[in-house]
Image (cartoon, rainbow, N blue to C red; front, side):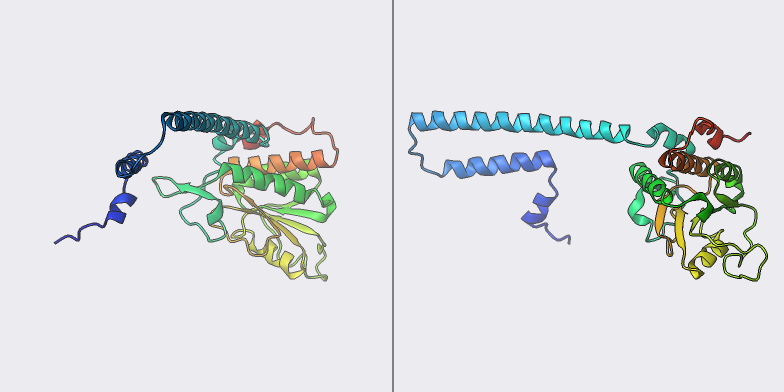
Length: 271
């Protein structure tokens, strides 16, 4: 035999409209049992006060809605690029695996199980990434991108910024072994995906230098001094990230960006 629901449980299951009606009925029922000794003048005064209060609430609601729309429009205007451009590159797409570090950035899951990044947070993290990268001179930074779909954009990033890039292969030890002929020192390493670029990440951490890491939903961010979130599996998405980083980096250093290829080049498939 099913347990009879308590009154509290019944109330908790009411919808907003049903709850409002129940509350009103409860108030009216209570009102019936009260003795009223109010004069006509008192009742008239009370009605006027109620009317004024309702008007204030209506105006406040309108002001709140207007403010929300204003904030939404300002937020959109402040984004690095249009929201539609973020969407068309698939930068918001994650994987089925979501690490604890990436969970706060996930907006929802699609019907197929793929996690979806919050695009507002993608934009915020990219702005922060540009600001962080801009603290370093190009000769003190390397970009590592072993993922083939990102090679084209990574090479262009290196060309326009002067930042050294490693794509097909990163020779492990070249930052830690002074006996190697190609040994070099750096202050910051940009890691495109810590799963593929683990050798470069290890070397950077071994010499206690800074790490700017691009993380998808299935990445761990241990060792990163700053994290950019986004789809780091797709060439279009990586292209967009490298484009925005390059554009922001050049602007912050007062350099001319007129020769910088437009966004369509970075997210395209052909030279």
